[in-house]
Image (cartoon, rainbow, N blue to C red; front, side, top):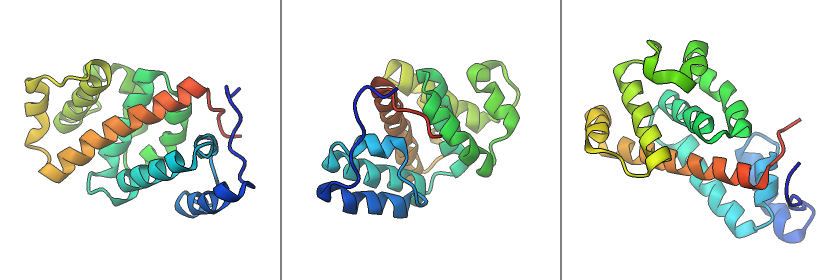
Length: 173
């Protein structure tokens, strides 16, 4: 059960933003966004950032979704994990890869680039600082824009999982 109430979509300040969220997120305001609507400026900024990462970035969807699922595993963010499995499968992440994410370091389901991305994700999420060797292992696989988008994706989805877990946002029904 959520720790605070969800924003009221009928509130005049919130209504237009809720409509924008519905438009950009497939016709429904998910509980994550309902919680964010408690602060319209934060909700709007969040929507803009996550829309850029999910819909406007050049980083491959498969890499993006591997990163998001790994962050959810690391942070124990079940809402985030369950919400992104369908997206991951649609983007080409295999069920074996999803199943092996908790122990990716000993799995043969990931290629060298994916392994490098997962190591980068782990370093950013667990330690904040990324060792030079971890960075060097993926730098050649991505251009500067993609590296920026990869890094922003890891950072943003750590934000998402921490927000969801701190406020105990309810799963969708």
